[in-house]
Length: 272
Image (cartoon, rainbow, N blue to C red):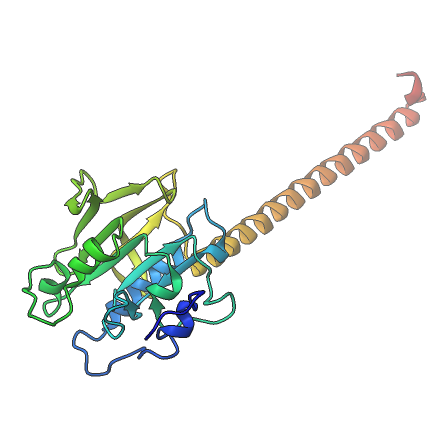
Protein backbone atom coordinates (compact mmCIF):
# COMPACT_ATOMS: atom_id res chain seq x y z
CA UNK A 1 0.00 0.00 0.00
CA UNK A 2 1.38 3.40 -1.01
CA UNK A 3 1.79 6.08 1.65
CA UNK A 4 -0.09 9.33 1.23
CA UNK A 5 0.80 12.88 2.12
CA UNK A 6 -0.28 13.58 4.76
CA UNK A 7 -0.12 9.98 6.05
CA UNK A 8 -3.48 8.33 6.65
CA UNK A 9 -4.25 7.11 10.19
CA UNK A 10 -3.35 3.53 11.06
CA UNK A 11 -6.99 2.55 11.57
CA UNK A 12 -7.65 3.42 7.91
CA UNK A 13 -4.69 1.54 6.46
CA UNK A 14 -4.20 -1.39 8.85
CA UNK A 15 -6.57 -3.98 10.33
CA UNK A 16 -8.41 -2.87 13.46
CA UNK A 17 -9.78 -5.05 16.24
CA UNK A 18 -13.00 -5.36 14.21
CA UNK A 19 -11.11 -6.90 11.29
CA UNK A 20 -8.95 -9.40 13.22
CA UNK A 21 -10.11 -12.72 14.74
CA UNK A 22 -10.92 -12.53 18.45
CA UNK A 23 -10.87 -16.25 19.19
CA UNK A 24 -9.56 -19.52 17.84
CA UNK A 25 -11.47 -22.64 18.99
CA UNK A 26 -8.66 -24.85 17.68
CA UNK A 27 -5.98 -23.24 19.83
CA UNK A 28 -4.54 -25.57 22.52
CA UNK A 29 -4.55 -24.61 26.17
CA UNK A 30 -8.11 -23.34 26.27
CA UNK A 31 -9.09 -22.06 29.74
CA UNK A 32 -10.09 -24.41 32.53
CA UNK A 33 -11.85 -23.20 35.68
CA UNK A 34 -8.62 -22.01 37.31
CA UNK A 35 -7.76 -20.06 34.16
CA UNK A 36 -11.19 -18.43 34.45
CA UNK A 37 -11.12 -17.66 38.19
CA UNK A 38 -7.52 -16.53 38.63
CA UNK A 39 -7.60 -13.77 35.98
CA UNK A 40 -10.94 -12.65 37.40
CA UNK A 41 -9.41 -12.26 40.86
CA UNK A 42 -6.52 -10.28 39.40
CA UNK A 43 -8.98 -8.06 37.52
CA UNK A 44 -11.10 -7.41 40.60
CA UNK A 45 -8.15 -6.37 42.74
CA UNK A 46 -6.14 -4.39 40.16
CA UNK A 47 -6.70 -0.74 41.06
CA UNK A 48 -3.49 1.34 40.79
CA UNK A 49 -4.13 4.46 42.92
CA UNK A 50 -2.12 6.75 40.62
CA UNK A 51 -4.42 6.18 37.65
CA UNK A 52 -8.14 6.99 37.27
CA UNK A 53 -10.30 3.97 36.57
CA UNK A 54 -11.05 5.17 33.05
CA UNK A 55 -7.31 5.05 32.28
CA UNK A 56 -6.84 1.39 33.26
CA UNK A 57 -7.48 -1.56 30.97
CA UNK A 58 -7.30 -5.22 31.92
CA UNK A 59 -7.32 -8.06 29.42
CA UNK A 60 -7.75 -11.75 30.17
CA UNK A 61 -7.42 -14.46 27.52
CA UNK A 62 -7.69 -11.70 24.92
CA UNK A 63 -5.85 -11.62 21.60
CA UNK A 64 -2.90 -9.23 21.73
CA UNK A 65 -1.80 -8.23 18.21
CA UNK A 66 1.76 -6.93 18.28
CA UNK A 67 3.44 -6.89 14.84
CA UNK A 68 2.33 -4.50 12.12
CA UNK A 69 4.40 -6.47 9.60
CA UNK A 70 2.45 -9.61 10.47
CA UNK A 71 -0.98 -8.29 11.44
CA UNK A 72 -2.44 -11.78 11.93
CA UNK A 73 0.15 -12.74 14.56
CA UNK A 74 -0.99 -12.47 18.14
CA UNK A 75 -0.41 -13.74 21.63
CA UNK A 76 -3.18 -14.48 24.10
CA UNK A 77 -1.96 -13.70 27.64
CA UNK A 78 -3.82 -15.22 30.55
CA UNK A 79 -3.93 -11.71 32.07
CA UNK A 80 -2.39 -8.33 31.35
CA UNK A 81 -2.77 -4.81 32.68
CA UNK A 82 -2.34 -1.55 30.79
CA UNK A 83 -2.22 1.89 32.42
CA UNK A 84 -2.49 5.25 30.75
CA UNK A 85 -4.87 4.00 28.06
CA UNK A 86 -8.62 4.42 27.75
CA UNK A 87 -10.73 1.81 29.51
CA UNK A 88 -12.74 1.49 26.28
CA UNK A 89 -11.66 1.30 22.67
CA UNK A 90 -11.93 4.84 21.28
CA UNK A 91 -13.68 5.75 24.58
CA UNK A 92 -16.85 3.85 23.66
CA UNK A 93 -16.50 0.14 22.80
CA UNK A 94 -15.57 -2.96 24.73
CA UNK A 95 -12.46 -4.45 23.15
CA UNK A 96 -12.61 -7.59 21.06
CA UNK A 97 -8.80 -7.72 21.19
CA UNK A 98 -5.88 -5.42 21.91
CA UNK A 99 -4.18 -4.15 18.75
CA UNK A 100 -0.86 -2.46 19.42
CA UNK A 101 -0.73 -0.34 16.28
CA UNK A 102 -4.13 1.08 17.21
CA UNK A 103 -3.58 1.49 20.95
CA UNK A 104 0.01 2.70 21.00
CA UNK A 105 0.49 1.70 24.67
CA UNK A 106 2.07 -1.63 25.64
CA UNK A 107 0.89 -3.60 28.66
CA UNK A 108 2.74 -2.72 31.85
CA UNK A 109 2.51 -6.21 33.29
CA UNK A 110 1.53 -9.61 31.93
CA UNK A 111 0.73 -12.81 33.83
CA UNK A 112 0.89 -16.32 32.46
CA UNK A 113 -0.53 -19.28 34.37
CA UNK A 114 1.64 -22.28 33.64
CA UNK A 115 0.14 -25.50 32.37
CA UNK A 116 1.90 -28.62 31.04
CA UNK A 117 1.01 -27.80 27.43
CA UNK A 118 2.07 -24.13 27.51
CA UNK A 119 4.99 -24.01 29.97
CA UNK A 120 7.75 -24.18 27.35
CA UNK A 121 6.11 -21.44 25.29
CA UNK A 122 5.52 -19.23 28.34
CA UNK A 123 9.13 -19.53 29.52
CA UNK A 124 10.70 -19.03 26.10
CA UNK A 125 12.09 -22.56 25.90
CA UNK A 126 10.74 -23.36 22.45
CA UNK A 127 12.76 -22.91 19.28
CA UNK A 128 11.30 -20.65 16.65
CA UNK A 129 10.83 -22.11 13.20
CA UNK A 130 11.37 -20.02 10.09
CA UNK A 131 8.39 -17.82 9.23
CA UNK A 132 6.69 -18.78 12.50
CA UNK A 133 5.69 -16.29 15.22
CA UNK A 134 8.15 -15.77 18.10
CA UNK A 135 7.41 -17.17 21.55
CA UNK A 136 5.45 -15.26 24.15
CA UNK A 137 8.67 -14.61 26.02
CA UNK A 138 10.29 -13.07 22.94
CA UNK A 139 7.25 -10.94 22.17
CA UNK A 140 6.95 -9.62 25.72
CA UNK A 141 10.69 -9.04 26.13
CA UNK A 142 11.91 -7.86 22.72
CA UNK A 143 8.91 -6.50 20.83
CA UNK A 144 6.45 -5.11 23.36
CA UNK A 145 9.09 -4.41 26.02
CA UNK A 146 6.67 -5.17 28.85
CA UNK A 147 8.31 -4.06 32.13
CA UNK A 148 7.11 -7.00 34.23
CA UNK A 149 6.42 -10.59 33.24
CA UNK A 150 4.90 -12.88 35.88
CA UNK A 151 4.49 -16.64 35.71
CA UNK A 152 2.62 -18.67 38.31
CA UNK A 153 2.17 -22.41 38.59
CA UNK A 154 -0.85 -23.70 40.48
CA UNK A 155 0.77 -27.14 40.51
CA UNK A 156 3.82 -26.03 42.50
CA UNK A 157 2.45 -22.69 43.79
CA UNK A 158 5.67 -21.13 42.52
CA UNK A 159 5.64 -17.44 41.70
CA UNK A 160 8.31 -16.11 39.36
CA UNK A 161 8.65 -12.47 38.38
CA UNK A 162 10.86 -11.19 35.59
CA UNK A 163 11.73 -7.51 35.33
CA UNK A 164 12.95 -5.90 32.13
CA UNK A 165 16.52 -4.73 32.72
CA UNK A 166 18.11 -3.22 29.67
CA UNK A 167 17.41 -5.54 26.77
CA UNK A 168 16.48 -8.67 28.70
CA UNK A 169 14.29 -10.03 31.44
CA UNK A 170 15.99 -10.77 34.73
CA UNK A 171 14.33 -12.90 37.37
CA UNK A 172 13.59 -11.04 40.58
CA UNK A 173 14.80 -12.67 43.77
CA UNK A 174 11.81 -13.03 46.07
CA UNK A 175 12.38 -13.38 49.80
CA UNK A 176 8.63 -13.69 50.33
CA UNK A 177 5.69 -14.48 48.08
CA UNK A 178 5.09 -10.79 47.56
CA UNK A 179 6.51 -8.21 45.16
CA UNK A 180 5.96 -4.44 45.26
CA UNK A 181 5.63 -2.45 42.03
CA UNK A 182 6.31 1.20 42.92
CA UNK A 183 5.24 2.47 39.50
CA UNK A 184 1.72 1.16 40.15
CA UNK A 185 1.52 1.75 43.89
CA UNK A 186 0.46 -1.89 44.20
CA UNK A 187 2.01 -5.19 45.14
CA UNK A 188 1.39 -8.67 43.76
CA UNK A 189 1.52 -11.72 45.98
CA UNK A 190 0.30 -15.24 46.67
CA UNK A 191 -2.75 -15.38 48.93
CA UNK A 192 -4.16 -18.44 50.65
CA UNK A 193 -7.92 -18.31 50.86
CA UNK A 194 -11.28 -19.04 49.30
CA UNK A 195 -12.28 -17.45 46.03
CA UNK A 196 -15.41 -18.46 44.13
CA UNK A 197 -15.92 -20.97 46.96
CA UNK A 198 -12.62 -22.66 46.07
CA UNK A 199 -9.88 -22.87 48.69
CA UNK A 200 -6.42 -22.54 47.28
CA UNK A 201 -3.41 -20.38 46.56
CA UNK A 202 -4.19 -17.39 44.40
CA UNK A 203 -2.41 -14.39 42.92
CA UNK A 204 -3.91 -11.09 43.99
CA UNK A 205 -2.96 -7.45 44.52
CA UNK A 206 -2.27 -5.70 47.82
CA UNK A 207 -1.94 -2.05 48.89
CA UNK A 208 0.92 -0.05 50.41
CA UNK A 209 -0.11 -1.15 53.92
CA UNK A 210 0.17 -4.79 52.91
CA UNK A 211 -3.60 -5.34 52.93
CA UNK A 212 -5.11 -7.48 50.19
CA UNK A 213 -7.29 -5.41 47.89
CA UNK A 214 -10.86 -6.64 48.52
CA UNK A 215 -12.99 -8.06 45.76
CA UNK A 216 -16.49 -6.81 45.09
CA UNK A 217 -18.07 -9.60 47.13
CA UNK A 218 -15.60 -8.99 49.96
CA UNK A 219 -16.45 -5.29 49.94
CA UNK A 220 -20.14 -6.17 50.08
CA UNK A 221 -19.49 -8.56 52.98
CA UNK A 222 -17.44 -5.92 54.78
CA UNK A 223 -20.25 -3.40 54.30
CA UNK A 224 -22.76 -5.94 55.60
CA UNK A 225 -20.54 -6.74 58.60
CA UNK A 226 -20.12 -3.01 59.29
CA UNK A 227 -23.87 -2.51 59.08
CA UNK A 228 -24.45 -5.42 61.43
CA UNK A 229 -21.85 -4.05 63.82
CA UNK A 230 -23.48 -0.61 63.71
CA UNK A 231 -26.89 -2.14 64.42
CA UNK A 232 -25.42 -4.06 67.35
CA UNK A 233 -23.79 -0.91 68.69
CA UNK A 234 -27.10 0.96 68.37
CA UNK A 235 -28.92 -1.85 70.17
CA UNK A 236 -26.33 -1.86 72.94
CA UNK A 237 -26.57 1.93 73.21
CA UNK A 238 -30.37 1.72 73.35
CA UNK A 239 -30.18 -0.99 76.00
CA UNK A 240 -27.76 1.11 78.01
CA UNK A 241 -29.99 4.19 77.67
CA UNK A 242 -33.01 2.13 78.73
CA UNK A 243 -31.11 0.82 81.75
CA UNK A 244 -30.15 4.37 82.69
CA UNK A 245 -33.82 5.44 82.41
CA UNK A 246 -34.89 2.53 84.60
CA UNK A 247 -32.26 3.37 87.19
CA UNK A 248 -33.32 7.03 87.11
CA UNK A 249 -37.00 6.08 87.53
CA UNK A 250 -36.12 3.75 90.42
CA UNK A 251 -34.10 6.50 92.10
CA UNK A 252 -37.02 8.92 91.68
CA UNK A 253 -39.43 6.38 93.15
CA UNK A 254 -37.13 5.77 96.12
CA UNK A 255 -36.77 9.52 96.67
CA UNK A 256 -40.55 9.95 96.52
CA UNK A 257 -41.13 7.16 99.06
CA UNK A 258 -38.50 8.65 101.36
CA UNK A 259 -40.10 12.10 101.10
CA UNK A 260 -43.52 10.62 101.88
CA UNK A 261 -42.12 8.80 104.89
CA UNK A 262 -40.54 12.03 106.17
CA UNK A 263 -43.84 13.87 105.84
CA UNK A 264 -45.56 11.13 107.82
CA UNK A 265 -42.99 11.76 110.57
CA UNK A 266 -43.76 15.48 110.46
CA UNK A 267 -40.55 16.39 108.69
CA UNK A 268 -40.51 18.66 105.68
CA UNK A 269 -38.36 16.90 103.01
CA UNK A 270 -37.32 20.29 101.63
CA UNK A 271 -35.63 21.15 104.95
CA UNK A 272 -33.67 17.92 105.22
